[in-house]
Amino acid sequence: MAFVASPATAFTLNELAELFGDMPACRIRNQPAPGTATEDHVVEIEAREDRLCELVEGVLVEKTVGYEESCLTVELITLINTFVKAHKLGKVSGPDGMMRLFPGLVRIPDVAFVSDQRWSERRGTRKLPDRVPDLAVEVLSEGNTPQEMSRKLDDYFDAGVRLVWFVDARKRTVKVFTGKKSSKLLGEQEVLSGGKVLPGFFVPLKELFAEVAGASHPRRKKRSR
Image 1 (cartoon, rainbow, N blue to C red):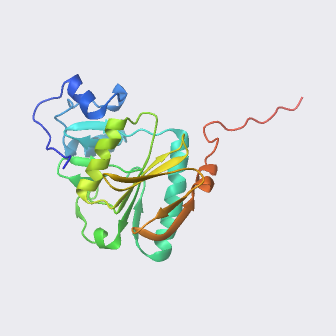
Image 2: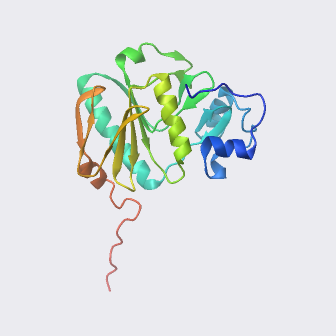
Image 3: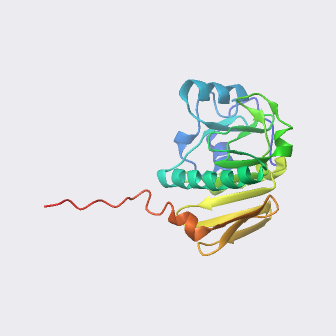
């Protein structure tokens, strides 16, 4: 199990690098000191600064997303939520939906589906519910590191998530995980399915990525002479 309770003392730079890899320093909050943060800090910062932070071993890590990744996230939310509502399967949350997977461990998937059965088991607070999604989707940004995503994957499956997608807008791929060691990489010409979590849900990746192609570099209109 990947999760370890938050230590009482601050981490060194070497310890942070071991946890998160070569993560941009601006993503790790210095106050409170890394290693000493709590769930209360997550809620307070969101309320005071409107900034979203995940909490991992007492470290506050700010969410990061680029423009194209944001467009792709919105497209995925629209597709998944339309399917879920049509079949009355549960609830879909977006990139500001904080979830307490374990005491002291807060994750914020870019998109998450929670089945009706799990939704009825809701506990925790309104701002920080105890919530384990059936599906967690992460749209990769430039600031994400392999160490960060590997740890995040472990946390999801340790908590009981059934399906995880890592969506790469730049490479136009989706890596589908049904377990920590069970994955399949889908290319742009393949079809993404909801598997056993969302049976009947299918999205041709060529169509999905076409919706956001060039979002970060829109064409300029020619000026008339």
